[in-house]
Length: 294
Ligand code: ASP
Ligand code: MG
Image 1 (cartoon, rainbow, N blue to C red):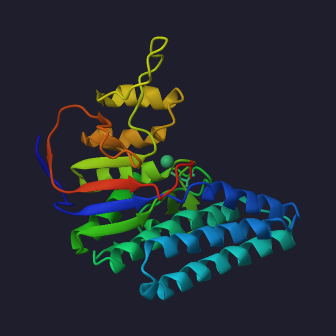
Image 2: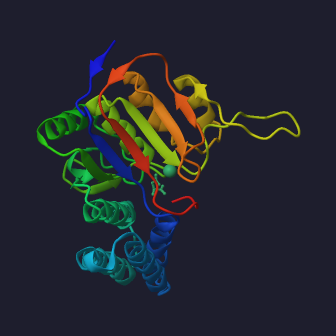
Image 3: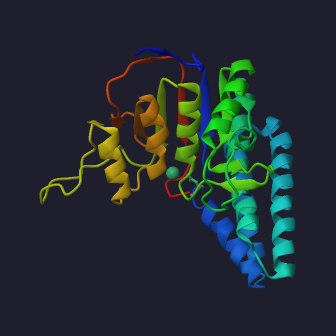
């Protein structure tokens, strides 16, 4: 079946946090709740890493606006953590609020990078489109509502590139939730399915889904092509290449998923699919800079 994609010639770029930042934010929240002032150093690291990323990606003369946005966001994280420190408690809801800044900061910086290099794009906060229940830390997506919001939005919004934070969503009251560790892949799959994207590309730090148990002396190799079912099995049995829930929404629509290596983009990678054909634009998850897990 050939389905017309709402994204025809357009791309949604879903950005995950800078490597290690999610863990640092989580530990800042824990330290603050335990009354340990070391959370301040963690937050300094978070700010420093993002300011450095801005400096390395954006020309000097164009940096001031994004630098001040980054600083403003970092001040918000600090205010929240100061509250946690004073109250001696970090609820799951507050923890989600704190970690959400990892994806917010990285995606803002990537949007600014495109903007300053002449690629017009719209930054769209995923919390406006992805609705979940209030199970903080691993919220369940309300697919009917999310699909409707995404369709409404992408039907009217005009841009060839949309930059969005992965991992974060909102409950019906608009309170920030998260989709579980590794959830940026899932964000992209949810959006890809909602708009009938041609492909979902997941840019990660390995060259695809690896064959399990290669014979002794033989190197692990990426499967060039596997089925959704095999991909689900591999991801559940410890191949940490993609977040397991990612497969479901795209499999339901028959959207092929490419696993590609950011650090070896010429490697063929793995395609997960069955055989349907689609028309239109694409969607991607893009981890920012480092190799370490985000
Ligand atoms: N930053 C989140 C995490 O580390 C989501 C992701 O990277 O996909 O779990
Ligand atoms: Mg990931």
